Length: 442
Image (cartoon, rainbow, N blue to C red):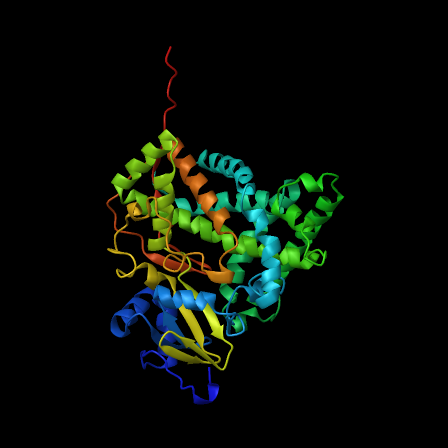
């Protein structure tokens, strides 16, 4: 592109003061974005505090172009979890370093190893659901959070005994606080033990101490090469030059896997229960499929839950080149490009009758990777996507096999932003009746 002759060309957008746009973005983001889409079309420009001038896109063709653009043209946003997860986190890495790290982190979370993790998932579901009240409405979100946390600790950290108990107490507070301060630079400052930044650093020091203890135990074990937890696999992984990951980078990646997978998976499961309770026909079919040992409708339902209730509603990139030509737009250096997952998923032009919860739209169909984007896309697509999908599938399969779930005519639960994820406002209320074991025929 001839930079000398290039002219900036941004999509239209509201002329409200930056502070008012920022308030709307924080307090009523989904409603605001939907109104702006109706007013200005699938692309529009915002002016937000901290983010600055931001071009919002929702057309799959533009999302595809964004995800396929080289990192020297568009790169990491200034506001991502990397600022609290550490310099060794995938969220903090870009370009060649990001590519090298992905090659080490992806293999433990894909392929045949996932089958070995299924038994752990089912064990944790049975352990947690043994405490469920019978026939009494309760919030599923806390229960799903405990399940996914225990799964992460066992399959990723390889934690057991004292370290398991310590991490189970520490990690919810660490992740919750970290997700809240990630986008607010002032809160990240260490202003003493009672400040958010000071408390986060204390949590992080404790986390690093526990991980260091787990690493020492793993390295001292005579059967390290036989272990299948992600920590042990990362300890054995090597870059192309034969060098291992540093201990600090391993700790950063373990925290990244937890932050990116634990709360988001639990939240998607809570949304799944919220959705299927309000669609009795889908629930009836899911229960029958689980009894018969099938999985096709369950897989389609998970895809549809993620489409209609994405727990991460947008993906940001920062323009690093002098200019970036994105479709009809020419965006200057320093601007943010935001791919709106929520707007894309709810566009009738992308998904006909998008407002309907209809898992059948995904039966026997793999969704387009630039239209259905709950895990992001391109070189920065979530490395734990396959693990999370397996986890959700096994959790739903086990619950549907063990319980009859009550339906409801209550209005849909409103969406509520909770740091990392957008969760059901009433925590995914659920009613469950344990199935009576079938008697053997005499």
